[in-house]
Image (cartoon, rainbow, N blue to C red; front, side):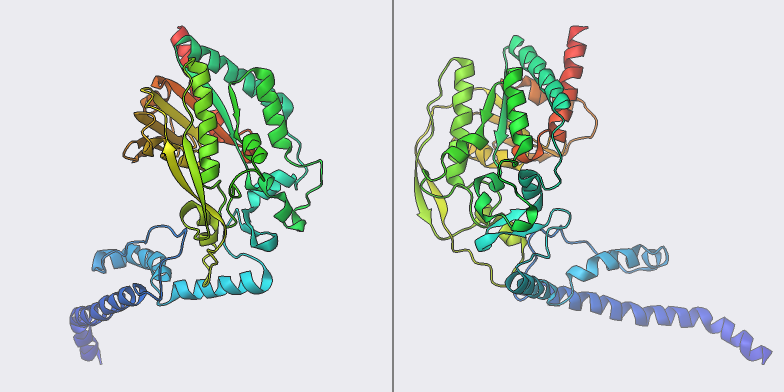
Length: 398
């Protein structure tokens, strides 16, 4: 018995090696199987899904330290055969039978009346569902600081503009679901407080929210698409012209507006379907009225650098300005710290969380535009910009 035990122990390394070889091939083959099954027309990637996780090589080191298992755990769900199809089928049941969305995470997609789509945060802000009143004292203090920054920039031959962008909820309140508790006369408290405070402080204000709402019923198309959360191409050019008008006013050199015509279309795509795509349905309906923009004349190039600090509502105006070559260089500091995108070329560079030279292009620009959506007044990116500007003002004064 002792001899047999000793012989078994001697053979253990050989058995382990043989087992390893037998195990490695099936796992490698399984990985290849899943790769092939996942990459089919029946299983297209889901909209809004993060980049695919890379599977680490299956070897002794990765297996023993657990890194292979962890990478496999993250990799597998997105490679399961027909996983995307099953998600879409489930979402279609929620949407068609329950008028509900299973997508959106912390900011779920809200399905409004007649199928109009919103994100919950816009509705909560517009309806003031949580009945939270703005902190007027803090807002006024902030805007006094912005006025100081505006005056400091002006003393250095630069121009500051504060832009408020619109909310789809404010444009289409008639389609908001009843459960958000909108009460007539009590909506948009953040917007009204923010605009009033900005005017009292004397900021160079472009209220694109008011301008877009003023066009409702007068524009060629609805300025917000049924399945999108941002304004359409017609809304984009209206908002862009408002900013060009203010830049020209401040520089005492009027800038001609972008001349255009709008062709209504029933073929929604791109930004006009941004949240419809995030629903990840089996049979999304892309047939609703959108705007196709045709530029008939544009202003001459204004040879100054322009910096935008803002969120997603400045992307379309920036891209239009870039396409028409109205400014030679445009910097977009996305939510101030998320990323810096430089036009032309749409070059993306990541930003450190600490202040530093990465933000120099804001203060070297001739025109600095700070944008906030009416949903998030005051915003974190505005506070970050204010802190950086005040720090530079203090250092400049020394």
